[in-house]
Amino acid sequence: MELQRISGGQSNPTFFVSYANRRLVLRKKPPGVTLPSAHAVDREARILQALAPTAVPVPPVVVFQAEPDVVGTPFYVMDRVEGRVFNSCDLPGAAVAERRAMYLSFAETLAKLHDVDWQAAGLEGFGRP
Image (cartoon, rainbow, N blue to C red; front, side, top):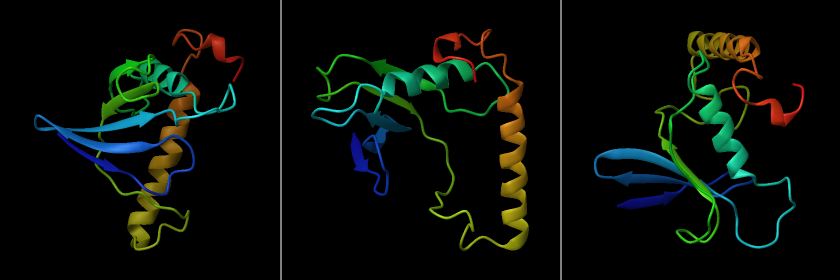
């Protein structure tokens, strides 16, 4: 198994995991005292699982572990989706046509998210969207 920390995140520690020919991502709650509503990896996993059967493209969640026994804090593992990470909305390094395609894809995905029946998806505990 190979584990590589992903730098640049602002909240939950995130790692690339390679295991048995699978490429995965692990997100975990940081150690120590945190605000009750912050770093809720359980909420992240629940939303991804709820959106999986919809038209919204999300990576499948492989496992969610609420107990800290395995890695010291609650965590979940999801399939890794290939792509690039941009730290700027300008999408530096992307050609004009490529940026246009990404912006359109973003808008289409946002429209799919708005089409989700949040109650039917089991997300009513999150409050009205």
